[in-house]
Image (cartoon, rainbow, N blue to C red; front, side):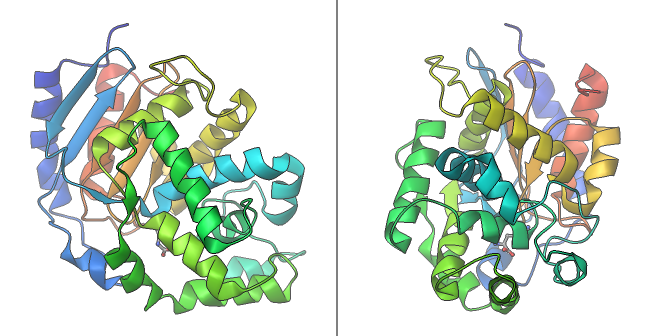
Length: 309
Ligand code: GLN
């Protein structure tokens, strides 16, 4: 199967998008993330048969909000749709990912969707496992299976740094606990969530994850089902409607590629033909998405007619 473009074209594209990254800003609310190299730019495209790369693709970074699609898939596999959507809605919020406001306004008070922080915290609370370690162990095993990379681990430095500055996420947990959305120990829930965000990957791993999701949950190498097709479809749909936070509508019009972003500057995209795209470029635009990465996907989608719409 032909891949979206030749490697030399991808390299030119990455080169031409580096300028867009200069308009972005490294986020400063998690001290460990401030150390990110603003010049880092990597992109991997893989379709199971072929992999092409451009830029600094061996550099590791943390998943951050990209982990929200992984925990969602696992929670749906663990507990089923009914249990998950009792706790979290299916609608885009149009608000920034960290907001408390929508929780206060909602009746009943439950997060609007699994891609904002409140929703992701509620989803993480549903993961099967009797302890923090067991839940994280299961998440890690799932990521290893999705990427075929068993060397992926948690970046403890990033996790600790975020744990020390997690008042807002802890407030979201307590608010939801007081409304019966989540139960138990909120410090433990916060720890699992922050450590899932601190999973350290490369663009290769992201591209592989995108490829599995694009193939409705099937491993591109073996054809084996890792995520049931219906759950892969739910994940892809959230990537389109909420994957880029409150820029999801604009991104759907300009690129039209199911994509999830994270504040590390990570982006994972899943194309319907089973092509996965993994990008990292840390400076973010004002909505919290990788400025250079968004430019790259919009340009690629326009040139190769990749919009799913
Ligand atoms: N760990 C970050 C947080 O919870 C992830 C946010 C993001 O990537 N948008 O704030």
